[in-house]
Length: 390
Image (cartoon, rainbow, N blue to C red; front, side, top):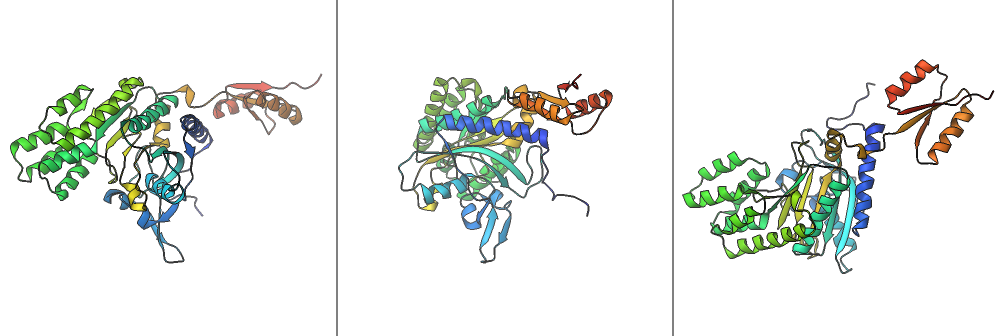
C-alpha cells in the first residue's frame, strides 16, 4: 500500500513539533499567570450545538457524520461554541467570571492555505460572565502579551466594533438581508465588493458615502474622533464610547503601539456582538488569530452570560516566528555523543541532560568523517567523542 494522508492533512516531524510545543508551553504558562485554567472538550459534538450562531461560512465547512444512535455529529470547527456549551453545562451554578483557556485541534473543510489546513491547532482563552471595557481590555491585553511572549516582534492588533457597525446599518434602515450581505463581504476583506453591493440598492448618496467612509476608517486613535463626527444615532455613539474606553485602558497598559483601529473589521462568525479584533504580522497574508465579544451566544445554552475571547493559530504563529528567524522559538543547541563503548556514551549523555542540555547518542559505529556528516545533516551544534580508557 502506498502511504498517504487525506488532502489538507499533514504529519509534523520532530523539529517542527518541538518548536510548536515550545510555543504552546509559552502560551500555556502565560495563561496560567493571568488566572486562566485549562479545559479540554471533545473533538466532536452534536452538530446542532456546534452550528449555534456559527454563521453560514463556518457551518458549510464542518465535517458531519452520524453515530450508531443516528445522532448527527460534527468535528469542532472552532473552540468558542464548545467552551460556551461546557460553561453552560458545568459552570452555570458558579458565579463568574470564569477564565478558561484551551490548546486544541479544530477541523474545517476548506482549501489548504499557508498556516491552515483541514486540521489545524489553536490556543485561546474565553472570559465568561464578565462584561464591559475592562473585560475587553483584559482579553486584548492577554493576546498582545501572548504574541510578544512567544517572541513575535512586528505585529498589530486590528480592532473594530461590530455593534457600532450594525447600529449604523440599522440607523439607515438597511434591511437585515442586506446587512448580512454587507458583513459577509467585509469579512472577506472585499472593499470593492462592498462598494458594488451598495450600488445595487436604492440608498442615498450621503448614506453610501458615510458607509464607505466608516468601513475604510483605519489607523491610530484619531480614527475614533473622525467616526464620532459622522451622523450617528445614540446606539452607534454608545458602542463607540465603549470602544474608546477599551482603547484608553490598553493605552494605560502600554499597548498603544500594537493597536490599529479598523472600523471595517467583520469576522466570519455570527455570534460576535461588540468589540472584534484580528492579529496581523508582515510574515503572513492572513490573520494570526482573532476574537471579540459574544454576549448572546450563551443564552442559546440557557446561560445568560456575557463573554469575550480570542484564538491564535499555532500553525500560523510558528510560521511567523520561523520567518523572522527568532531564536527564542526553541532551544536549538543539540549535542551528539559518540563512543566505541556505548555505555560510556550513554553516561556522558545523561550527565549533560541533568544540566538541561539536549543530548543524543550515536547508536552505530562510525568513523570521524561519517560522524561529522551525520551531525551536520541532523543539525547538531556540538559533537563529543568520548575517548576509550588508556
